[in-house]
Amino acid sequence: MRLNVNLPIRRILDIGCGTHRSPGAVGIDILDLKKYHPKGKFYQCDIDNENLPFKDNTFDDIIASHVLEHCRNLVHVMEEIWRVSKPGAIVKIEVPEERSKWAWGDPTHVRCFNENTLKFFVKGYYVNNSRYGFKCDFDIIDMSVSDIFLLNCKMKVIKPIR
Image 1 (cartoon, one colour):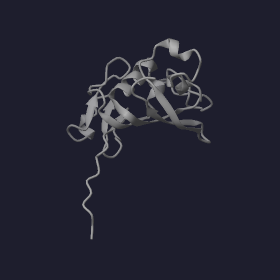
Image 2 (image 1 turned 45 degrees about the horizontal axis):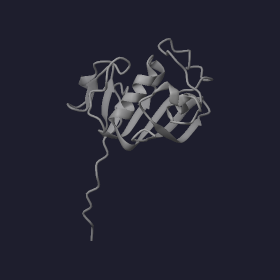
Image 3 (image 1 turned 90 degrees about the horizontal axis):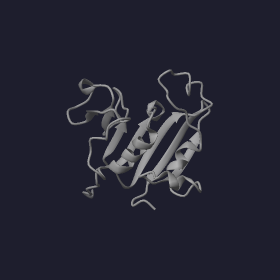
């Protein structure tokens, strides 16, 4: 006998998805790529300079793969990720680590990352980081650097801010 269990559908946002949005996710990119995505599954947005076009507490999971290194206003972007995430949401980030040949090799990169960069968004991790007044809070679940120097970070959204 098969049980009919209705599991909740997790809402996923893929930031900087380009033409290859993660399966089941809503995609967002600075470029107009609507023709590559089903209607209602893609939004065009300049995440560096605009708010994400979603209500607070919308997403269960957020993916930001190879996009944050292009952002001049990382604090704004992280605050927007936090805003549209549900409490306890999982945020998966992949960026070139500072030792990667791509960290500064790509002329469109405006920043590089190391193991400390994302820790500034964890309230109280550094003694002085709370004074920056960031309007977001995360816990780091896992962080690693691959053999080709890609920084992978899995974070949990903490709401309300501690």
